[in-house]
Length: 376
Image (cartoon, rainbow, N blue to C red; front, side):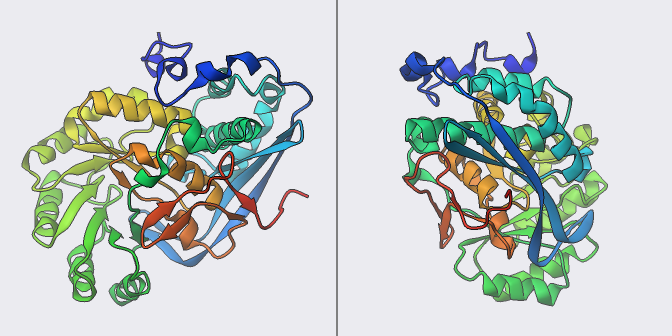
């Protein structure tokens, strides 16, 4: 048995409280007709340069997907991650390769996901795009919002952080001021000026801070000194202080840290959780990193079994990908779903954010409104 099928299903879906699938068995074979799949690379223009410890960007290239069948359209998004050897071109190629699978019944969405996942290793962003598009279609066909289909309460969406990318300290301070309605900030660090960054931000806000080093510190001693220094300045927790390969050093760090440490780059899918569980207090799950909503739900269940906290993160995404994440956010302890707020050309309207609170629509599926049709 593959570890990713560790829950023993035809699936997790049939045995999980998140999936009331047994209620819909009577229509499981009723899908008919041809599936039309359209996918296109879409350049997301950032409001500000987006800086991390490993680079800076002003444009991100994602892939938007539309699947149509029986007069209903489902939408998905791939935000490829270069660190994992993915690109917009490779995601587009993968989606093209997956088209024959989408000619089969979309009701059997778990089987479709398994078939899509088995097409090739990696390409998790492309898999995520197809997974959310299929689930969007299924829920629209049932006329139910995705979060209700999963048995979740939309009032329990956590507050999202607002992310501040690496930049000149004065610019980072201005970004914090502009985002004054948000109660929590996520600060990107992993540079030689990290202390200046945190001190500067503390000059303009006393709100909650969370920090993401993106593997930026290269020794356990440096990481420990920085983490405990930041803890004394009110930082709640930190993400991925060390390179993913330094798991032994990370376990050493966990034992000595004053604040919780969350894994991000150290894991991708549920199969990674047993290997890294002893070295972290929690994990950051991203749809684009794990391969979609179905795998994210498996990761939540497995993380809970290992006593780990769970955070739901994102890449730079449109409201399509962010709304898909928001639909499962009531399952999480912490949320960082702000990628759509960092761009100027979002072709969708989806989840709303009010003073950090994610507000989901009662519209069926993901509840998206298309404001720019990029496929025709």
